[in-house]
Length: 196
Image 1 (cartoon, rainbow, N blue to C red):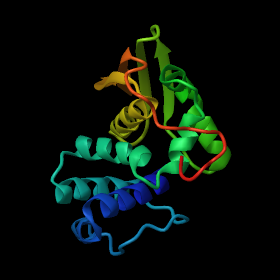
Image 2: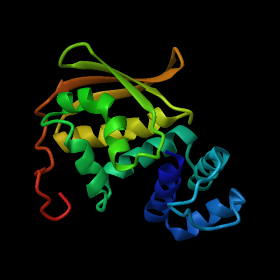
Image 3: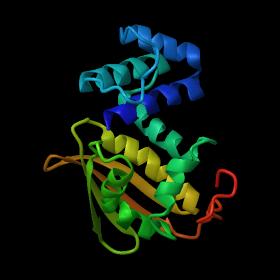
Image 4: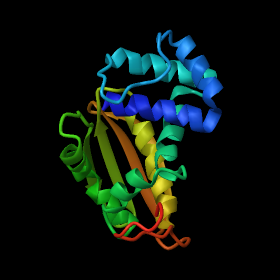
């Protein structure tokens, strides 16, 4: 998980804030290098240090930076692969939410050597879903919060999605769907046409 997150943070800062800000992040974090290699394993403390440095250099609280990172992962123009992986979770937003428990297992099919957070979903009807995320990295649910807000827009859904803190060792998100047909969702086809 940390390998993927390190690269995602680097791309996010470079794309949104510019490579010069990323250079400041690497200097503040005292990394000793300027790019994360996808096949190299880094100590988890490196990820924490980079998140702290990125929040400082981007002028955002840590949780806000992580949420923006999550939103970036599904809304940035070249985010097609991750977005498509998520959209395979269901034809509507509610079904997609219920499929999130299976996401770590699906991800392991592609990246078997990676550790992914565990996800537990509780469905209280079409309009109320609670999601528990257990991860060694504090704040992982803030990344998920950004992803879910981006995916709600992708499905054309009006929803309130909130981080509710820790509950029995897991971070808790609540999702309240107010209008499942609020807007026209983004086009999605099983066969890739362009980056859709």
